[in-house]
Amino acid sequence: MVNRTKAIKPGDILLFCTQRNEAIRLPYFLQYYRDMGVNHFLFVDNDSDDGSVSYLQDQPDVSLWHTRASYKRARFGVDWLNWLQSKYGHEHWNLVVDPDEFLVYPFCDTRPLRALTDWLDASSIRSFSAMLLDMYPKGRIDQQPYTVGQNPLEIANWFDSGNYAIERNWKFGNLWIQGGPRQRVFFPDAPEKAPALNKIPLVKWNRRYVYMSSTHMLLPRGLNAVYDEWGGEKASGALLHTKFLDTFNDKAKEELQRKQHYSGSVEYKAYAATLDENPDLWCKWSEKYINWRQLEILGLMSKGNWA
Image (cartoon, rainbow, N blue to C red; front, side, top):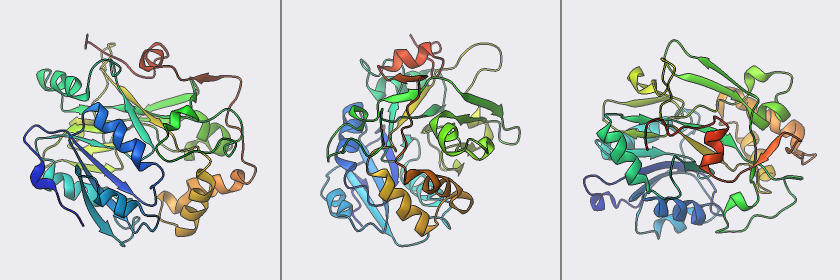
C-alpha cells in the first residue's frame, strides 16, 4: 500500500479505480485523466502479478491499496471504492472509471474537467451521467497489436450509433440502457442479458452516498435523476469503452476461470463461446468516432443548457 492522500487539497478532483493486471493500459489511462484535470488517483489492486503494482507505486499522484480478497464478495469492487470514497472523497468531485474507460463530455476538447465541475456546482447538480459506448476495431479483434502507452482509440475507434434500448428502473429511479456490439454479437438470442450501459461516473461525493451496482446507480436515489422528464435534455457525457483490443482474448479467458464477475460470469461465458473465432464486431452500420459533437448529434450525449 502507498497512501499519498495527505497531498489531496480541498477542491481536488479525485479518480477512483479498481484494477487487476492492467499494466499495459495504465500509462495512457493516467496521462489521459491527468491531462483532463484529475488531481489524485486512488486505486485498489486486486492481486495483480503483471508489474502494475510497482508501476502505480512509483506514480507521485497515486495512492494504492492491495487486496487478495474476492472481487465478487466485495460486490465486484463496489464495497472497496465506497469505503475509499467515504474516507477520502467527501465533498470532492469523484470520478469512478475502469482502466479501459475514457470519459468525454461537452466541450472536452477545449475545456478541462474543472470547467464541467464548476458549472455543475453553480447549477446545484451533484451527479453527471455518461453512457458506456463500446468501441471496437474494424476487422478481427486480434488483428492490430496494442502497445504500452498507446491511445487505444487509435485501434478501437468504431461504435454502434444506434441499436439501444432504454427503460426506467422504477425502484432506483435510474435509466437502464442495453444494446451495442456486445448485445448484437454476444447476446443475439438473449438481449436482456446484455451488459448495462448506463453509468453515473462523476459525483460530488458525500460520505452518506453509496454506489449500489458498479456506477449504474446510487443511493440516495435522487442522484440517479440524471435525465429530464419534461421534454428537455440534461447535460451528459459518454464513456468510451476500449475493452476490445488484442489483449481481450487472454483477459476474458482469465476472468472466466476466476469466476469473479456478475451473475455467474454470464458475460464472460458469452465471450468464450465466440472469441475463439476472433470475431469482427464491425458491421455496415458502424460509425467511426470523431469527437463529442458527433455523439451529441447522434443523441448519445448532450450539452444540455451548458453553453
